[in-house]
Length: 297
Image 1 (spheres, rainbow, N blue to C red):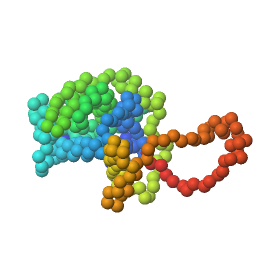
Image 2: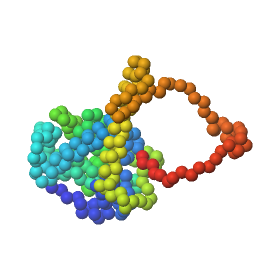
Image 3: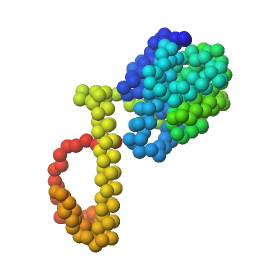
Image 4: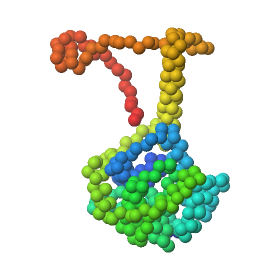
């Protein structure tokens, strides 16, 4: 098993799992995925709850494969994706030497980090495990190429081949990926840095928001969003039936449901009033105090 940790320590590279952020000498460095998402866009069709479930399952699969590569430990429960990983590795005669390896590189002063899923010393091959239903070959090609140049430049390892191990439920596929030239990767990095990095000069933190609190907040906001969408869907069905049956009000248990018919209302165009009749605006406006609040995006 290769050990690249000493090189990373010498370079001052660190990784914070809770926030999934990389640092060099305590300065945040963009990840390969950050770069790709900013340059190519990041489009999800799943709702937030589906994304969380898919992410958690993907993490479980990655951890199982990593434990096997690093320690020879197989999962204690049935897992189609792990079985298919073994089948694909054996079919293509690949012996993996690295798993879940943090990498770093800087090309023309433009640094990036990432976590490489798999590397084979015997076949000089890098590979990434993908568990989602959608195949994003162009993004995967850029990601693997960023990793390949990091292994070559920073760690002095030979990389001659790239692949994706696509493991989705009981489906599995070995996808060979053509690695991009350094000039092409340089162009990707230039586009990212020209757009502006998602990095703050100073990372702020709140004592009340530790990793557990952040996770609890995310889960709660996700649950609220799911419930709000469900309530909206139920209310729409109720409105439609009340309209069809000409029902204005109905009592069900402790709930009283009233139908509000569509109507028109008159409003003041405040922007026009302020711009065209400033004296009237000043004479009619009043100031009220609002309590402090926060916005969470």
